Image 1 (cartoon, rainbow, N blue to C red):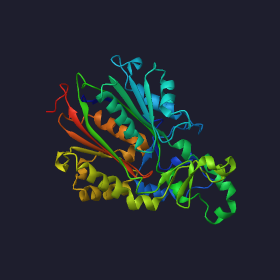
Image 2: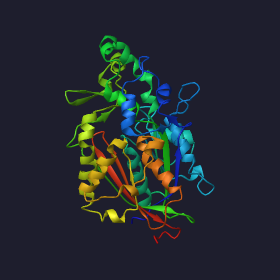
Image 3: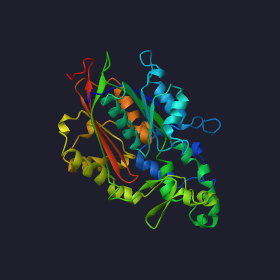
Image 4: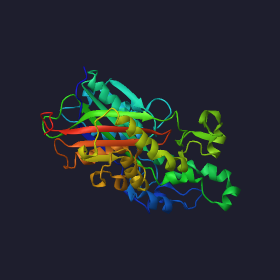
Length: 388
């Protein structure tokens, strides 16, 4: 029997003080010793004015790894009622884990030091935060766990730092004399992504005081049968097919900045709304009662303010025209933290005092990896577990 599941606590961790647009290239470093010509253009488009990096502002060296960032967010959930040893199920996700193997989640457990429990890693890009949350939800709903913690985290700065591109720059000196920058599909992402972690505690009963968020449903769809890879790392696109990093020797991986994150910007712009909004909602609305008038808060994860109006058009085309005054996002102040973004948005809204019992939230998380999308419906409940 499926039982109700409630998000009872939400925590976020953002390392160091915010970094503004003029500081960020100093923090991430100059590729080839030269400023990026794409930075100002990208920042005007994405609308982000500050973000956080796990980089020591004094030394310029990494100050935390991904597992430590995740653990910091999870510790924010703990209390006398839920000590570390009481966690039944731990699900952690990231598109930027510290290593290829072992899985990210076991490294998070090792960092936390909590006793043996079920530990699961979910992989992907932005969407893996939502798949972690769905696994945790199903674990509690099925009765397999009394509680579950889901976490999303990113340390994009470890991949975006100039040291990852200098090998490519130095190997292409002559070519780059006429165009002194790395390829745009790599360079523009340096000004889009940032670091952070967020975590939620799921339990089978609501908080004894205060509000909780009841998870009503989480629907996830992938369109990889129809679309090629758009965003990727650890691979190179050759003749329309991804060739993985293991097929290249170390020198070639370095020369091509193979481990850097890359994105086909044209493919993204032409298809992200069509597939992750319109095609996804077409399938969801065929099975769910979903009406714009019933949604009090819409929490969209998008990478750039450039997509805001396009998203509004996509919602209208899907017959779900949620007015923008009901949207809640903190992209411009917290940055694009990938798999952590939905947790960081929920934390600010949930702990900010705006919510009231009976309100309904709709969360949207797409990813352009090979075009996948998730929508999650939540209901705010009071201590009796009932909406007003």
